[in-house]
Image (cartoon, rainbow, N blue to C red; front, side):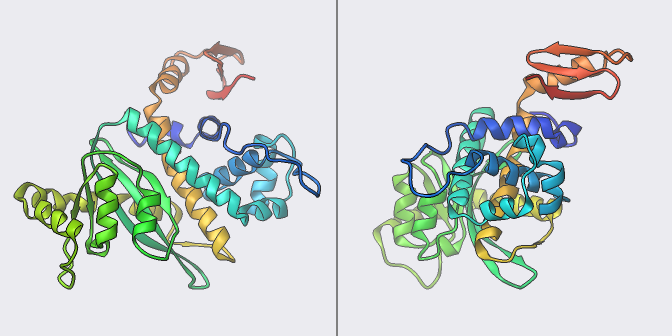
Length: 309
């Protein structure tokens, strides 16, 4: 995995290439219903919304001017972008994209343990949205593998956010619930949950308490804070508040930021493209000529890599 300060992680061409790979066959074609069908594929609107957050300085109007033609092929009005940003189907598609990116990162990176926690995002109107995020902690970095916005209890968001796996999973005292711990065991993990002093009943809770009392697990639980670095990275890069008018758009923007974080990790893991970049750019000619290599071309004058279509 390449270092985090490489400039390629901010390249829109690489980002669009990764988001297209993650959104392949994302929305199946449904039966024809009454009304006019959308002008573009809904997947393209997902790509446009994610890239809008990838360039954190872009608003809806700036995305209409700078990104819509780059992604969709023609100018899309900012009201249309806002309409698709408020649709619940788009939020569900983004959750699927996050789980897909998590599976790809599992293949690239070697995990040490898993971690699940919840955090809250606010808008300028002091409206809070709680999200449960499941992370993998690897030797090189930390990456999300699933999210959930469910609120009814602790078991349902844990079941939705955390995919099946193996190894230790760390959680704080808020997840010390008998049904939640049962879900963690059934998914193949060894749950190391900080015990809540006011709770002691339940078969699965007693099994988790035995694991927590082991000295090796008690020492490992001290590294649980490494999983919260994802929240700090999102805050440092995008800020601690969002400009959103309702809960649905706030959820879409939060998910877009998590996908942007995953895209940068995928670019760092995709050594093939980055090696091509290093080999060609350092030896590029000063003439305004294009070199083709594995479907990408490099302009020798401005040293910019774009995908050849």
